[in-house]
Amino acid sequence: MAKRVGVGFVGDGFIAHFHARSWVSVRDGDIVAVTSRREEKGQEFAAVCRELNVGDPAVYTDVREMVRQSDVDVVYILAPNYLRVSVVEAIIEEIKAGRSKVRAIALEKPLARNVQEAKRIIELIEGQGLLHGYLENQVFMPSVTRGKDLIWRRGVPIAGTPYLARAAEEHSGPHRPWFWKGSMQGGGALSDLMCHSVEANRYLLTPPGEKDFLRPVAVNASIANLKWTLPKYAELLKKTTDGEVDYTKFPAEDYATAEVVYETKDGNLVVSQVNTSWSYIGPGLRITFELLGPEYSLAINSLEPESKIFFSREVSGPAGEDLVEKQTAEQGQMPYLGDEAHVYGYTAENQHMISAFARGIMPRETLHDGLLVMKLLMAAYKSAELGQVVRFVDDAFDEFIPLVQQDKWHPKRLIERAK
Image 1 (cartoon, rainbow, N blue to C red):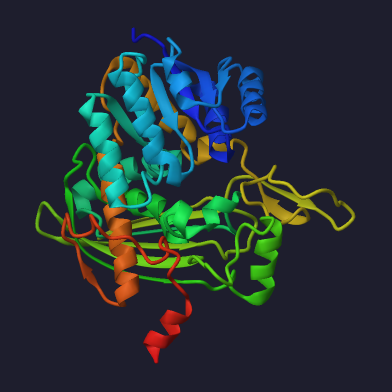
Image 2: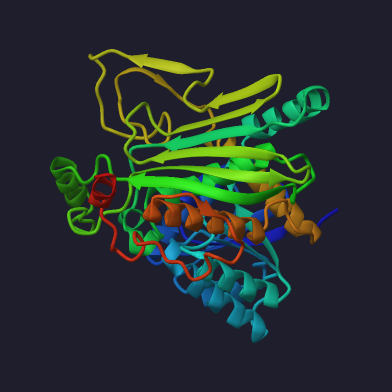
């Protein structure tokens, strides 16, 4: 039997709480430590872990001190994108100095803000021979994994392989101010959400057990700001972020679409279409997938669950997200999810990751998967900036920094180019 591992979280925000809720079903490890930039927030997160009975984490404000804790075997890096490289550098320095026994590191999606940073992270971690994982929850969603199994087991042997995957993730906007800032997050909705859709489509189009079945050939993308640069909403965003985010000066895209063309090992071309948006208003976060083949199709929609609830206009109360993530209403007929962490894939993701690390093996999703996603995202930004299809060459985007990340992009350029 594999030895249980101790896991230290770097970050105590929204995503960390999703992981903690899913940890109730994780058998091979406990959350034993957390690093927070604010002591009180770290203590609040630790209290949640104790209430869920998933660990009694010690609280730190310095990641170096956390990884010196003797029972921290695995580190989950859930810190903001702009801190990823510095966090990994600090951990690796402690390991090199013999002050840390960490043997595995997992990073939340997206891996970094650009290819340069992603490669630096992998170089540091693999330089110490550590196990590593890429925390992409959507390829662990039960609807996705079960749907893929059925298609490839029942449909493909008779009708042939799938040739088109579509995915979309849409909601009304991020929770924290830094997410809205291109320079800190790495971009806008494309960087934040398309990382999910790109990898989920690649997973659906790939035969079970054949990671290198697809080779990217070309990317065609466009980005826009449809809502949050409108005067009313730019002012609202500035107000709700206490002045931290000003889209009249430094906007990021709130809408993005891309098409990735792959060549299969068999020499066929298949297509991945993705759409992402921070300008969607509906019951809450909407995640959709489609997979099409010669004689079959698959369809998934997170806002069409088995359960719904109705409140009349006589029932009113404070705004919240107790029905579904990014909930935008408290009245009328609304869907709700019995266990969001399970539906969105966090439970299966953490079961798999921690089991692999406990057994001393690489998980299904490694940082190299995250690096490929980052290259595809940079190709999409490059295509959007040029207004043309970009041929995918493996090292072509190593030095590329999107205009959005440089705070030099403006949505009017799309209109000017169309004239």
